[in-house]
Length: 617
Image (tube, rainbow, N blue to C red):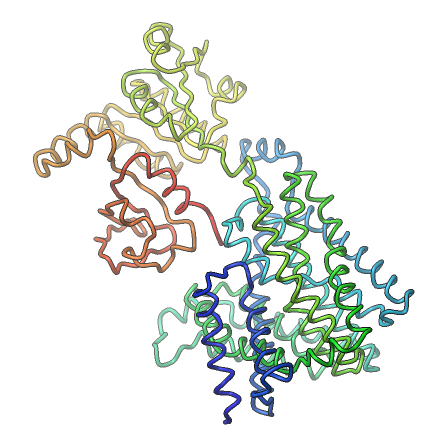
């Protein structure tokens, strides 16, 4: 233990605090930590000396950094099982211009590889940098962590644009990682043993099968003093890292594969949080800070060749991703295509790992590595900043929820008029008298018939929510079943008789159909008025009403109610978690898929609902 370690750990603590104090949100923390290392190291103050222990912790830091990068991969995006199954889902997919995030990402990253190879050849031909393969690998890298952070900030991880950029970044980390392993083995003279790397993946598959049921068992026996999930994670990490080194691969490949194994085991969110805490709370900042400590900027900037290489490498990182723009603009706004290509140009994590490996096998000089590193840092400064400035909301992200009512009567028309300002409402009826009565109050479409085939053909079932409001329970029941089979996400139907509801309860539940009896609803309201007189004020108020919202945005998971940014605008009365009611308190923490019942002003609720329900993984 020495003073340098104390200084580095204090710098790791102070850096994010300083960023928060100065309100700097666009600068990646990793870049800030490297900059702090530059100040503390050879370049300026020279008060931190890297020794054996500090270098060991830094090595653990890069291993854990790459491991957590492997855990960032969302494999559900690669599953063919995600293909739409219902007629409505297939129709919507066809209308999306045959768009596929995976296909688009492969096309975009294929263009990156072509650009990276071309730029590497240009550098070799000009004599500025001779190692063609290393340059191509470096130019093809993308900082997955930086891309995820930027997408999370804009809450884009679950829409088409965000998924495409995420997949491009995943490819920009996986493919250069594999290429680096092959490069290092060939450059070190171990090309004949390259096939041994297959043993690493065989071992990973074995560990996956061995621990596949671990987390189900873990929930039954886990205690705070054992932390079995973390012990198992580090066992897998160290096993695959050691095996990677033994078969002639790089330890970071073993760490990356370990991250993939843990991700596929589907651990609890708390496991991920604990691994993040160990990595980003301790080891990873040490790696970034020591990287800056070792960088000798005065020596680099006094070298004329380095001064030429820094801007050229920076431009190469940018232009190697330029063709992404032409792929993205086919499906997204031009500004977003440009923003996406510039965000994809950010690279730091894998560049550090590549440079470390390249220096170990003597494939690059210290000054050339410094030029690459400075250029990579510049991409992390420019990319997220321009992305935040250029990005504009796509039309799909502002589209209102579609609600179709079948049956125009006092009940449905009144509900539709109340919801019209924040839902896309359509009313349909086959009764001429009801059409004449209500069409002057709200737009009603008169239909000649109400058969399922006719409604499908005329796109009445093409909606997010279908409300069947006829008093005829048989008609409602048949249309509800047909709508669910067609693929409507939510079907709400009316039944006048409790006996009928009881008879059909099991069938309706299995089909996922929601139902109500107007008489029961009215009786429940009357009972509430007697028991809670203020209920009348809530139900009849124009400004404040009762609402429900489902927690989909992971930004709110584990957040206490008292810390919600909009808590002064609403009153939370109940939370339903796994169909069980919870009485909320200020320190109650929200969980994913919680149903929150609250009262608030109608004008405030759309923004609150959009924020909480926006999918953000």
